[in-house]
Amino acid sequence: MEVKIGVQNAAREIVLESPQTADEVEGAVAKALEGTSKLLVLADEHGRRIIVPAERLAYVEIGEQAVRKVGFGTL
Image (cartoon, rainbow, N blue to C red):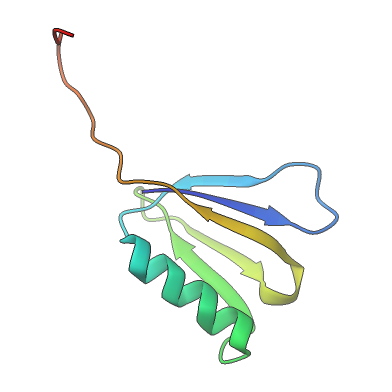
């Protein structure tokens, strides 16, 4: 799942591939914005954690599940 995070006062967005589902990412964002957690914490597919302070979030874009193709395909 590709996730793009915009951070206030930052020139670049954070882009990661996450093994989490769209609902799990949405839930983590909602908790961070509600004040339940002051941090948005997501994991990428390599096990790294991305931590963003909730008050600095500008936007979170949740992409569709990426299907990886192996080998040569026909169109």
